[in-house]
Picture: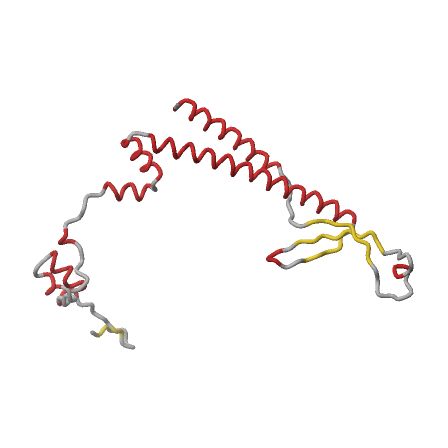
Length: 195
């Protein structure tokens, strides 16, 4: 059973890589469609209004719909050829990605079944392997004692008091000793130094 599951997973992975290689070979893509159009102009006596009408064209037109808003653009023969190629590439890309999703869903189902049937120790190792390194190291840290947690009601002073009972008296800035006082000297115009 385990061997057949592993073989199926390996086959899915091989096929998935082949499809990924196909994606890399696909060229530029574009959405939309290219159509050939014949049009009428606004000139009343033009042949396009005759009976039977002889419409102007053919003209290539590219139509796309970004954000639900239809946009059209008239194309030259060269542009039409390029857009037809890009649109075909887009269809091919969508087909390949659809196959990749189907394969990934099958592989995911096998992996989930495999993880569920594994012994508890193997399951916990697999779960740890899926966690980021920071999360794994946090799980291994010992709990800190309650006294080191800050008391949010009393603020910083209560936190300091929970560590050292007399520390609240030393929370202010200590006064400078005379030896630490900075001295400033000014030089007079004559060059002598005064304090």
